[in-house]
Amino acid sequence: MTSTFTIAIDGPAGAGKGTLARRLADHYRLNLLDTGLTYRAVAYALIQHALPLDNVSAAETAARQVDLAKLDRAVLSAHAVGEAASKVAVFPTVRRILVEKQRAFAMTPPGAVLDGRDIGTVVCPDADIKLYVTASAEVRAKRRLAEIESIGGTANFTEILADIVRRDERDMGRADSPLKPAADAHLLDTSEMAIEAAFLAAMAIIDEVMAKRNKA
Image: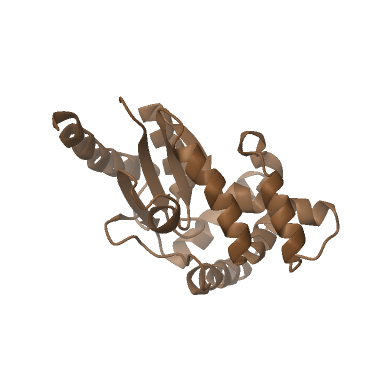
């Protein structure tokens, strides 16, 4: 690749886009950014300083201080941090600060795979590839329950499902950068698809675009 190559992956929580993004970044040797972690980092900073999640000024300050090279997935993956993140993510000023950082990351050679909620529509509207990865709320809730149980935890399926539905409504209903497929995104519904099948389907799409680009 002589210039940057960007793969934008969007979709709701639990659809498998994070796993797919990691597989694709590794396969194509591209940088990887889970943009959701940037919002989680803002929320985590507010929680650590015992600041209210509706403190826009504090959230803006935290957003400016986010270092994309120091996002600790182990710490930021906590359920409470995720819940808090979807609340601070509704602030337009916070989104603008983080989107600027995310765009700079995408432009760093050799390119990047970014996954989130508004990559193809807002962050990288000119991305070479746009994928929208989705799955039914019930399937996503089952996956989340299995994930929790696999590490020895316990959870209630009904509560997880309700949580996912609430998060979807927040993400899709916010006024600024709502979750929705880009007009030119390729849809991947993983409800009845294993990660390997999703990976192969995504690779077929990407390889076709790369082949056309290399001929140009």
